[in-house]
Length: 125
Image (cartoon, rainbow, N blue to C red; front, side):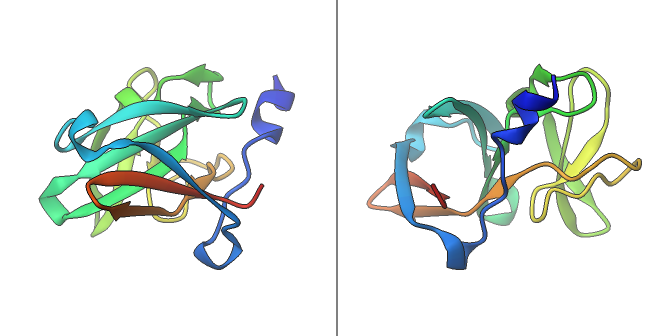
């Protein structure tokens, strides 16, 4: 199971080498998430319309290794945007992937940009 997590590495904006065109902004629910595939990875993309921001992270929850984070509820924890796993209620920062209610390792997060009504996700590979 650990090999599933090994393919997900957080990417900082300064390390982006590829901007992957994921879909039109209209393909994502308002204040919700959807899953896109990039190579052999499932990426959860969130349109956090309430605060006017977009986020992307790995879709796999590291708790039970299920591909579910795109279906998680989004909200905030003391001003930090977060997603809650729909199966186990583990919460993760959408800004840096930190586990906000436990001691699990951080999830991978990715930069997102919007250009001409399209959503792009930044990867370093």
